[in-house]
Length: 121
Image (cartoon, rainbow, N blue to C red; front, side):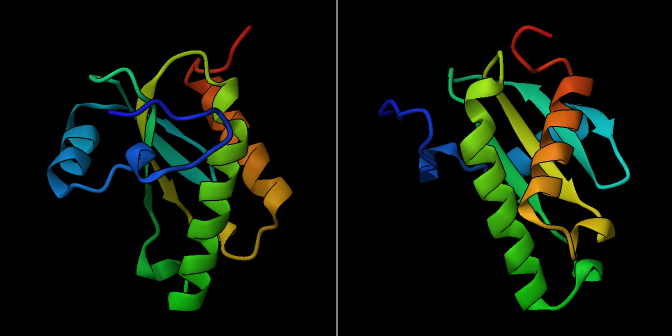
């Protein structure tokens, strides 16, 4: 696998396979917030990866895609703050449907801090 530069978000950093999603859901530890949930498993290949889950309860396709775009952007800009390489499944909750980018960043940092993933924490 190619090395990716910090700050980029490539296809190598996405959890897309259904079996990997299920493995992370079942064997991963979870961190819960009123805005979302992180399911976390240590990385097996040395790379950090993220999978996004936005259910139909969040809204129509336009709203769900907007939420996913903001989640990806938040991960892209904050991945260098993570102290270890892990697989994360980020499940969005209804409150994120109308949130702005700064709210997504607060949620990501709060969940990462709860999970003990932030550098120097």
